[in-house]
Amino acid sequence: MKTDKSDILALLRGSNGYVSGQQLCAQFGVSRTAVWKVINQLKEEGYKIESVTNKGYRLLESPDVLSKSEISSRLTTKWAGQSLYYFDETGSTNIDAKRYAEDGAVHGTVVVADMQTTGRGRRGRMWQSPSGSAIYMTILLKPDFPPDKASMLTLVMALGVAEAITEVTGMDAGIKWPNDIVVNKKKVCGILTEMNAEQDYIQYVVIGVGINVNNASPEEFPEEIRKTATSLRIESGKQLGRAALIERVLFHFEQNYDTYVRKLDLSELMEAYDRHLLNLNAEVKVLDPKGEFTGIARGINESGELLVEREDGEVVQVYAGEVSVRGLYGYV
Image (cartoon, rainbow, N blue to C red; front, side, top):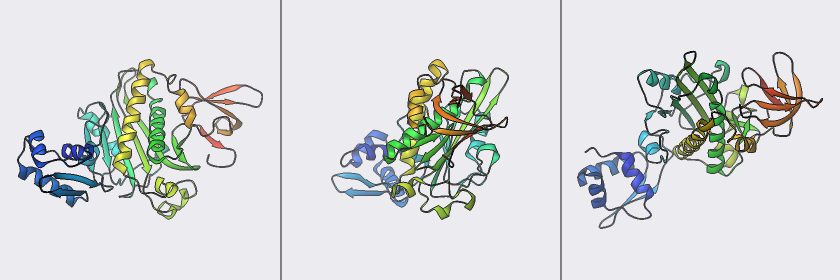
């Protein structure tokens, strides 16, 4: 039996004290030499592991490394990320996930990269993707529901990311409808959902998530987005473990997705989403190609549309499509 680094990492991480070499050998059915080799590999990757004769091994510190074994060792999900691909560098995790979907990859397959060379944002904009500081990940879904229900999955993911960031950092992560994640009025995350479907059947959906995590200063962002973009490290003053955040995003997304598919609407998630909605009960400007207007955002409906109350009291349902919503005085 092959020794799996992620299994050994998970055992060390879950233990309050030392784990004996004998216990590791017995649990995984391998030799002491095989265990020793894995421990040494982990040390070379930057993990601080204490080895004490007659006591065993103890994990003291995990570096901010992204690897398949680091992410897998943390997973608490039933299906999200249980099939996992990791790359130090790739063109686009969304493109990778679509390729795996065509090759028969299972529902919940996740692709993670430390760096992207051809990442894209909404409306085809290029997404800056340097290594060592951000999360670039895509989840592949093969849902058994009609194509017209897929657009709400973007909001399901936005809620999951906001919940995960709030939990991990203690900062309030807000949602700028429909799917930009914002901390202290600046964007930390973009989400891009793509679908391959027939008229009445979804082949697959991929949802790409890019989170600015450990960028150290605003100068690391391109000049054109410097005023509106930030990172979790800049806002919190702390370096964060990206693998731990990935695990929390997948956990919350899985919970929310399973809730969503029960009724195929957002009725059971609206309250949680509105708690994170930045513009709730605030004045917004709706940038509709048919004509701009202002009003008060009153939350989302069960289809994920933003309810905006106009000056005359009429409540308009704003669909995400090509409509943007801005605060009256800036990005939020």
